[in-house]
Length: 461
Image 1 (cartoon, one colour):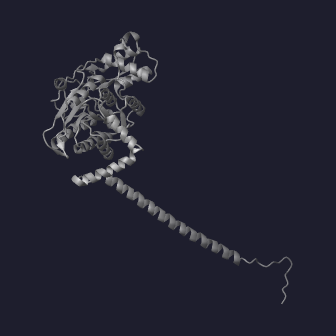
Image 2 (cartoon, helix red, strand yellow):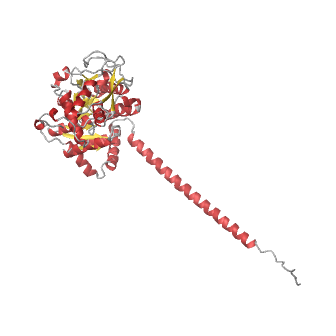
Image 3 (cartoon, rainbow, N blue to C red):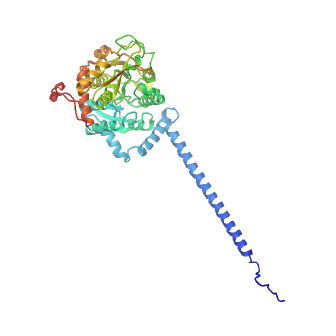
């Protein structure tokens, strides 16, 4: 049979093979997608399982059950293993640095753990102890409450004097246990804290975390140490709060804090009493009164007044709600250091062993101040004279942010027990501070030469 095509006519193309090929490719894609999905699911499951196991292991080690005896020793050993992995890269080299820094160089010298060693008071105390031959090991987390670069500069200064600062947090029980395994500290000088009255309104939990939880964690480690160290720690004049009796004495009421910062320091004093009573820890609290001087804190009035005056910026000079001048018992850093060292030298040994109290232990609280309150207006006047520049002052009523209008220390108890006697007046101390400030920040000094004493007989820490 013959077929005849009409002019221009054509038969339809055969699409069956193309359709089959597309179906086959679609099938292959579905198979591959299924295999890929199954493989991804298996990988995701394995990764999730691994992360869960790591987290369980981490929390088991860092938050062990509170038990004694063999259980605690086993957990402690695990902590040591983790610390070896986490701190210092080369464990042997890191431990060598820790031991070397903490080893005293004088007969019967102390081995002191200084917390907050990168801070203002901590760095000065570390240098004073090291210079007299004690072993000093620092601990600091170098947080950003104020310029960490200043803290690092203090660290560099301490490193030049062979003082090693371990970078870590008070709440890191693994690290603290590791340090106590390496070094049998005779003393702790606990100066690490979240400082500042006003900042507590912005970040209240940081005060609870550092000043309460961190302190408790340190005491927990100290109570279990063998031997237990004697502890000297920084409370604050802020605990006097709304007290109106002056000068402030250690037996005055401290149950009316005016700020959260003050409340956490008062809580610290009560916590110290508890650990002394139950575990036999020797504890001495020091109530500092407005410490100032070289290497100071940028959040303090004398410091940022100096900065703003030099840069031509206005400053707020506070007065009370009834327009009375605000005054502070400004205390120079060298006097505070003498007080801290005196408290360490007279601290008796703790009496606990194995976490249990064996005998009554020493419990003390002291004021460390200058005993001579100065108004903020006079402070500004001294700075104007030293800087050779008039301040652009704005007189402002003090806001209700936790600050108190007046502080004045009675230091007779500290004088009686360890000879504490402040010797630096505000004008002398500020002169030393300004000299340091313009040098550290590389500012062309406008300090009046006639106001500078002969510095050949003076040394600034």
